[in-house]
Amino acid sequence: MDSVRPFIPRRRPRLAKVIVQVTVTNDRDPTRRKRFSALVDTGASGLVLPLAWREELGDLEAAATVQLETADQRVVTADVYGPVWIQIEGFRRIADEVIFLEMEEGPRGYQPLVGYTVLEKSGAAVDMVSHQLIARKYYDLKSAAVA
Image 1 (tube, rainbow, N blue to C red):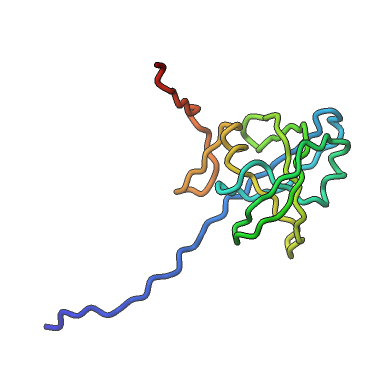
Image 2: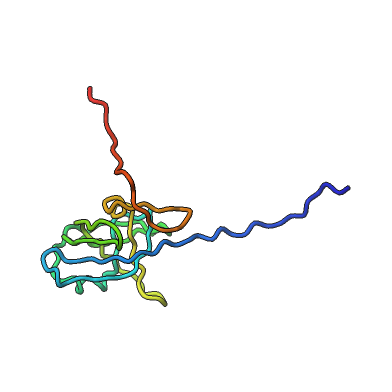
C-alpha cells in the first residue's frame, strides 16, 4: 500500500472586500454633501477621500497637512479638512475630519477608504466570516490603575 499522498497545492487566499455606502456632509453647509461607496480598510486611519472631491464638499477648514504611509510603504502628503459629518449606512453618524489624498482614478472610479477610527466611532466592527460590517455591542473601555 502506498503511503505517499499526492501533493495538492493550496489555492491563494481570496481576500474579501468590505464595501460600504458613506455620506459625508459639510457641517457648516449641510447642502454640500457627497455619497459614495468606500472600501473598509482596518489598516487605515480616518476617512480617506480623493483630493478631486474636495470642492464638492464646499468650504471646509484646513486642519493639518500630514504624512501617510500607504499599503505599498510609500510616504505621501495629504490634507486634513473639517468639520464634517460622516454617516456609514446603517450606523451612527459622527462628527470628524476627512483626509484628502491625491489618488489616481481607476477603471471603476476612485477608491475612498474607511479606516478603523471611523468604524470605532460609528459603532461598527468588521465581521470576518460574513465580510460585512456589524454593530458593536459595546464600546471598548481601557481603564488604568489609579495609584
